[in-house]
Image 1 (cartoon, rainbow, N blue to C red):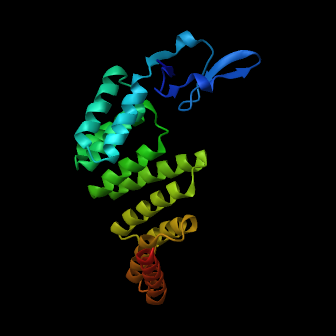
Image 2: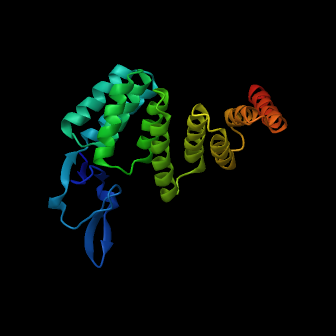
Image 3: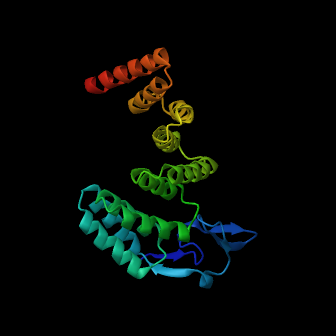
Length: 229
């Protein structure tokens, strides 16, 4: 059975294959909090059972077997209560089950373990937006964008957050700010039809009819292309 080592501070898994040799010393660098450990005894030893359970839980989620996914993630949490990925997956399952309060509790747990989880901040923002608490949603989206940008994450991750941020500004009737967010999203992904439509709606609210029509035209073109594909 493979053994993994978990950072005692943030719960990130540190695999043996990530061992680095610096000045002839073996060290383990945590991906989460960036802490460096020189003594294996200082790390938290966890059997690889959590890895297979995590995979089973993810597979069940993809197949729409949400209750089954919860069984797997709850088992991981029993083994390792500070397993951030398990709490994050559990939050996602509850969100799909429309159990937003339970999802929020899971995401709060993740961020207590590791506050640098950009995906979790984004997910939390989505829940606040669903509750109509758009100012709180914007705070979460800003944190997510800051983290994703510093990590150099792919554009397809960041455009979705900018799009979500724009939708919250739209709900707050801050249409100029919404357009700025939609423009940022489109800089990262020109082919997302819903962003063009959202930008068109925001421009229309500002009586910028000609610009709005151009956006709706682009939305229509991309929609027709999707049908052909």
